Length: 153
Ligand SMILES: CC(C)(COP(=O)(O)OP(=O)(O)OC[C@H]1O[C@@H](n2cnc3c(N)ncnc32)[C@H](O)[C@@H]1OP(=O)(O)O)[C@@H](O)C(=O)NCCC(=O)NCCS
Image (cartoon, rainbow, N blue to C red; front, top):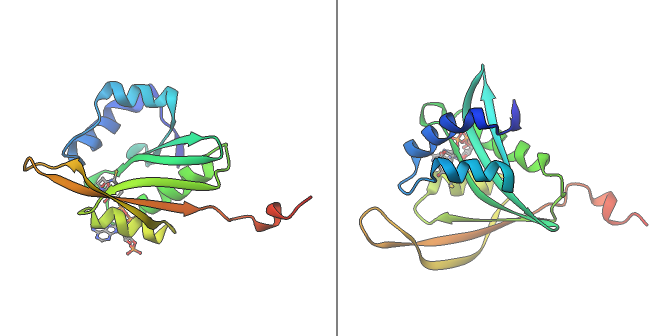
């Protein structure tokens, strides 16, 4: 089940983030994200297994962050979380943008499966663990789900 993130989810969300990211968001960043963005969690059997933070901007949106609990990965939850979180957006975006580390092949594959494609490369954008830098791949998804709406007068 997808639902909006609540204050009571923050510890579970932050735990997942700390397990998967080299430069994790802080608890207070997640707290702010509840107010500032569309922050959703995927709950299975009463447990938060993943989260997704989307920033609606006018008629577009940016995917800021998402993750699935490492013990729950590879079960289709990431795909479900992203698809349902996008559907949940109230601004019906025309396009959704994201940035992803070039080395993050699992995420890139998920995004491609979700109809995102690369439009740009930002060189040496992310710091990495070893003290070096890593390129960011910029991707976009065009939301053309309901063509009939486009041609309605
Ligand atoms: C990226 C992430 C969210 C995917 O979540 P997930 O629940 O494991 O993904 P799913 O099981 O729904 O897989 C969906 C698709 O993603 C791709 N994918 C997922 N894991 C993959 C892996 N280890 N290697 C390659 N492709 C992978 C596949 O295309 C898969 O589709 P398929 O099963 O039909 O092949 C998860 O790996 C994660 O939390 N990673 C750490 C945080 C992160 O990198 N977030 C994104 C950047 S902010």
